[in-house]
Image 1 (tube, protein in one colour):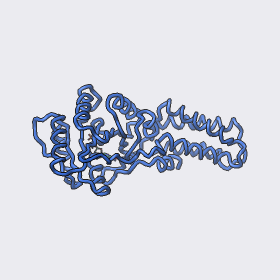
Image 2 (image 1 turned 30 degrees about the vertical axis):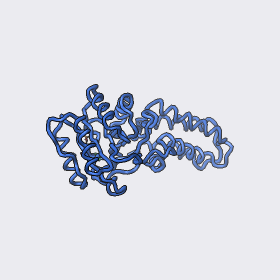
Image 3 (image 1 turned 30 degrees about the horizontal axis):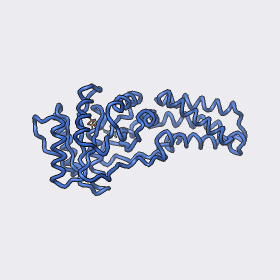
Image 4 (image 1 turned 180 degrees about the horizontal axis):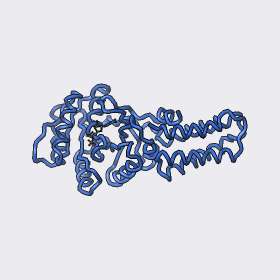
Length: 298
Ligand code: GDP
C-alpha cells in the first residue's frame, strides 16, 4: 500500500534531492505537487492543506534555501510532518491497561471493517504478549453468524468466549460478560459490538448504552483503510457520538492509497493504535507513525 503516494512523493523529491541551491519557486512548486499527491492518495482536503502549510512553515523557519542540502532538508521536513500527522510523539499507541480488572475494551465499527477478526487478534496479542487473561463476547444480537464467528476465532486464538444465550439484549450480554470476568478472574473483556452496513441511530444508541454499562478503558473504532474517504467519514460520525479512544486501521496489507491513515488523527483526534496487516490472527501490529512515514516516503 501507499505505493501511489510513495511514487508521487519520490518523483517530487527526485527533482529536489542533490541540488545545491533551490529557489523559493522550486520549493513552492514541490509543495504544490506534494499537495496533489496527498489528494490523489485520498487524504482529506483540509488535512492536505494543513500538511503543506506546516511543511512550508518549517521550511521557512529552518532557512532551507540557505542550507547546503536544501532538497534533503525538504524531504526531512516532509518526513517529520508525516510523523506528526500520523500521531507521532503522543505515546498514545499502547492500550491503557492500568485500571483494576476486569477492564472492558469496546470494539466498534461498520460490518465488514474487520471488527470481529480484530477482536480476536487483539485478544491473542493481549494473552500472549501481555500475559492477560482475556474473555471475548459478541454483542451482535441480530446476526447469530457473527456470534458464531467470534466463537470460532476464539477457539483459534485459544481465548474463551462468553457462552451464547439467545434472547438477551446487547446491554444484557455486556453486563453478563463483565460479571463472568469478575467471577472467572479475567483481566480484560473484549466486547465485539454489532456492525451495520451504515451508521444508524439505533446502533449508536446501543453502543452508548453499552459504553455506560461497562465504562470501557478503550473504545476502539475499527476502520477498513481500503475504503479511503468513506473510512474518514465513518470515523467522523462515530466520533461525534461515541468517545472513541483509538482507531484500528485494517487491511493495511492491501493496496489502498493510504490517505485514510493520514487523515485519521486530525479527523478523530484519537490515535491510530493498531494496524491490521492480514487475515491471520497474528497479523496485528502496534501502529508506528515513524515506520509508516518511512513506508510512505519509500
Ligand atoms: P466485521 O464484519 O467487521 O466483524 O469483519 P470481519 O472481522 O468478519 O472481517 C471481514 C473480512 O476481512 C474477513 O474475511 C477477514 O479475514 C478480513 N480482514 C480483517 N482484517 C484484515 C486485515 O487487516 N487484512 C486483510 N487482508 N483482511 C482482513
